[in-house]
Length: 597
Image (cartoon, rainbow, N blue to C red):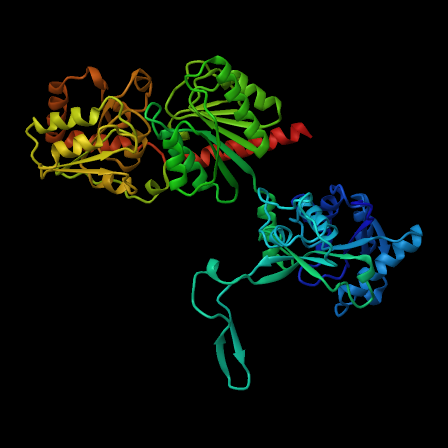
């Protein structure tokens, strides 16, 4: 009941469906199609009764199993040619006669709309039973509804005019054409050719919701005089009429909400964020959102530039323990508010309290490159860089769990040329030790006289200085914000890089590489070694220019060495890392869900 109005939801479900035989009781997402609509209606805080009108005993049985009442529909009302008006009227009259009471609102909800949300049904009820306000009610009726955007401000709805009927619609703007039968000509139904979003709104009924006040429900109509529209999302508007619709609905029902907690800064680099983006790009069947620290704008810049949705939290960095604890609480509050199915943490050092709290709240947790106390509370931990000495049941380490960026899947494997014509320098997103300039100066002092490419990361601190310093040198080309990194790498004959994630990208292409580690942590990244085709010089800040020059000159002169480096890289499978991770997560998540039932 809402504002003393007794509300009935009628679900018409006949047994003689043609497009998909017996569709109302076939399993969609593990339960009968009609069950989705029944459960959606039962979850409403305003609906008093849910009634299924059917001519089919099996539908009757299943509807009652899921908590709906049923009325028998006469065979004549189940024929293909019969519209819904007399069906809904018949069901309403039967129910009212049975209870000897009259409803105030009758809502038709189709069983073929399994993705309709309870909050949308509730919004339709409130919109119907609240006064129309010129400033915000009509605005709400034309506002796209989705999980994060529903408008219905009751307190400000003042006025005396009400809607008699509310119908759900979907925005159906297109460059449409008509046909003139008399002149046998096609003609445009628009004034000018513009992008879809600039066309005037055009609405199509979805059939999902048809809510009307009881006095307008008759044998021949359910329409009042004053009609209101509620625009719903494309997803909620899906009406299952054929097998293609069924397939789409099945995929959407399987869709998971995934939250990725990660950041990027000059201190921590950009690798965590870029891995998150690589994961997000492969989860096209799921809803992904990033949770980012407001105090680390580099991460926000990268994610927004790639057009992924994100939410932010306040940072307590450098403000003391009390502020830090408050910040962690806010992060957890943001996660709880979004309510994801899976949380992915790519933050290197997870806090045990943070991870345990999330687990205790019932979230499934996957961590990447985690060397913090939260490892033992995560359901799964994947670490391509570190080989952990202490074995844990939930830990998967090694290169077979590395996730390549999309562009590296489509590059061919490098064929080694006898001469080295191009050397590439790329030391990650921030290069905190400025190894770029150290190696560049070493190369310029060597015997090498050919082309040098330098790629600067988003967080590189000395961009202007290095560009100004070498702008007169025609051998050197400096790039930043590179989007086609695989092209630059593949065209190089030798690469200098740090011992981070870039190693895996280079190995996937087979380009000979010399590594210099940025810090002590990178020294533990065991992938960058001779076994996998790399020359690793150790901690970059301790390597002398003479050592860099000697190693560089020996490598460019030794064609057989470079061929062997290429061969060893080719023995490493780096193109199935995401598949390996996805398979493991899918199995573990399924087991976890079954244990919780």
